[in-house]
Length: 439
Image (cartoon, rainbow, N blue to C red; front, side):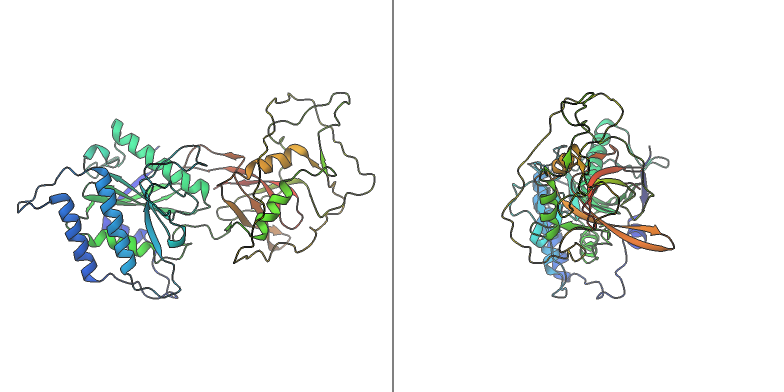
């Protein structure tokens, strides 16, 4: 499937890069000295001490990475920004994979908020906090996955180029998996040239190659424009809030992941006729009316509230269902963080301060496997989010809030509907629900 649109650099600047909102201070520009210093540093790397005519040297990829990251950091530091404006830093991450990343991806570098940047060059990528990623290749055309000369197809199908394209798509997919995003900008360095790209679930819009060694202004302007944008214009989903360690929502998720002997139950009591152990995955249920937001999608019916809700007297502790094959997969348990200090900032005003709201007429019990599946989603190193989903109730729009961690299911492709499924917590009732997120 063709997923790339190639545009001229000036068109990428004017039509693809988001404009700075009027309410923000005007775009800060770089001092001329910073640009000239960058040109001198890059020229020395690629041309050495040669006199004209200049011939490009065969520069190693690591040397390109070290120099480009230093030049980018110098430019971002030189920006004269308001004191309250976020500051950013580029950090290398080329040798190690993030322990929580099943794909073991090692992007060369990324740009982070200054406080979130890895502290040394031997660090792995932080997919949760990276705002933009940077991939660097030696100056060989075989590493350029796009073709500026083709009049029909931008995506070159040669073996090496296709592998590089798959590599960049994997990095992009990782950012979209760890974060809730509407779009993502990235930078590809190929020797003495660069390409800027904007990714979303429909594909990528990519600039044609620009020589940044002879004219570093274009590269530095691109980076400095991105870091002056608000997070939502950088591509972060405004309906999803990252839950930091120490926030009330973080503690609530830990508490509801713990076994509850009063409310947890199997499909049928062990020892009874036709007892079936819980399956490895929740059984299919009838979907509740969809409540769609951008991009967090629809919500299906939940199963039961937990702590804070007292089961009615005489409530049965079993449910029966049709016979089906049982899975032999063992339940996975893990230690959750304890002794968590309160976060300095905790915007969890929409979480209940006491007991969860009881729902009349609903069985408060929960299938044991549902709680266990939620517990399994609280993977160490995996981000947790608070999602706000707009639903239509009668003639009014209502916002429902859910807490999620690692998805139970995710579509394998970066492009398309990008469906994900979560075992989530409804913060109003404390019930576990199945939440479907799709484009």
